[in-house]
Image 1 (spheres, rainbow over the protein chains, first blue to last red):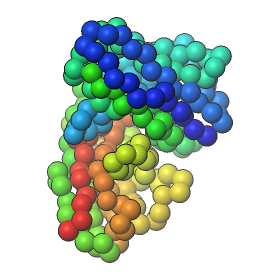
Image 2 (image 1 turned 120 degrees about the horizontal axis):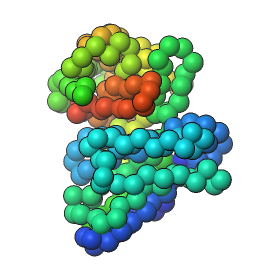
Image 3 (image 1 turned 135 degrees about the vertical axis):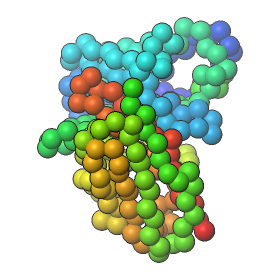
Image 4 (image 1 turned 180 degrees about the vertical axis):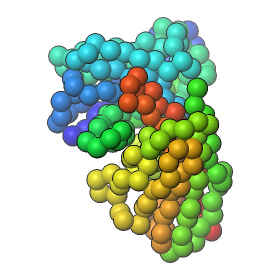
Length: 120
Length: 109
């Protein structure tokens, strides 16, 4: 069971970018995949989630309008996209699986990608 | 909007000693709380979910407690691999929102 993310990127302000996160070894289509940002020297911030089977995309209010999340169920891959990058988008971006542990409200992000470093 | 706070900002601990980390929610979240350890160069690792259940493979020296608005992560007999930043995280069943706390850095005394 793993999530494998695309490689590091160095971009100029104003450029567009799409990074990926591919799931292996579990039912990617039936689970939520979350995106999490870590800006340099800062903490973790939840950006949004996608659910392939339900065609559901939910954004954190802090990131709505700033990013686009998408998913291709056929290849078990989630995407995070920027139309016009800013210097403040520099950071490490993680995808993670939201898992349900079977009793009550027991959820957690239990499988994480290795992270994609974006430098703008 | 639920706001998560953590204390202290930094905790300096000697190996073998106990560490107690606190997390507070701005409103009642029941037991919908997870804890993660994040070490430099690695992705975060889930330690605790449902406020008190250890994730698979997490050593018994890690324990979580609390409900409502106040939560605690206790690490008995800290090991060298336990140093890093600990985050608490509130979550919803649906919609699947998450909110991370600002983190507590545990470093070597």
